[in-house]
Amino acid sequence: MKVIVADNYEIMSKEAANAVAAQVKKNPYSVFAFPAGGTPIGFYAELTRMHKEEGLDFSHISGFILDEYIGLPKDHESSYRFFIHNKFFNHININPEKIHVPCGLAKYPEEEADTYERIIKGTGGIDFAVLGIGRNGHIGFNEPRTEFGSRTRPIYLAKRTIEANARFFGGDPDAVPRQAISMGIRTIMNSREIILLASGVEKSHAISQTVHGPVTEMLPSSVLQLHPNCTIIVDEDAGSELKPSPNGFVPGSGVRTMIY
Ligand code: F6R
Image (cartoon, rainbow, N blue to C red):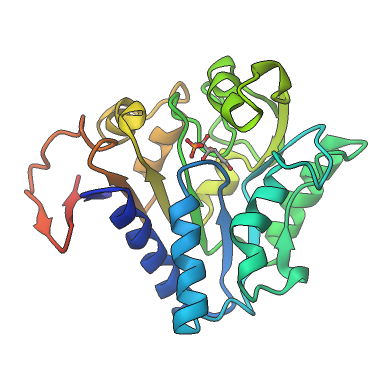
């Protein structure tokens, strides 16, 4: 597993944006999975800058959001559809027909999830998934105890996730939806390449367990140890509990790269 520790949040965001830009240039028709949340905001800002200042062309990519709350209308300011448009898609030249977000108000969420999974498969699968991580090691909204074989489906949010995400709902945990539709672990693991971003000391334990701990459904992100092409990109705080790699590290500009 490759881990890049960046000196700070800004450099972490740029590293991640550079990886996505390289993928877009390598294959302009790439299929991406993208996260919402606080962590990727700088990453989306950097990709937006690359589009506006350097002409990075997103016109052929497909973008699937990893998850969406159940019960929020499309234009709700805390919905992930709103988030990804507001922070990213509205500022680049992605084709609206290639934007995919599960509908949080679908009458039958199970069917909505199955359809989402089918659409992902129909594109040929995800080439490049960008992930965040919960303090409890969730990826997407796959909470601890999620089966590694899971596909896109409705899930219940863990209490810790509801508490952590209350900050996007005016600080009120009661306003956070209890359910979401999330890509499954298997869906994510089928991606050809994965990067996971984490920032802040509150993610440091989850990150060290993801890299050094046992592969267990109790920590969903630990499954990434089994992925053949996964890079974890963290800032100094999120990487603060990592053990030194037995192979040492490769220094770069504002980053050091370790292989575990
Ligand atoms: C969001 C998602 C989640 C978040 C995670 C971290 O689409 O899939 O796994 O990435 O909850 O959220 P932040 O970045 O807000 O700490």
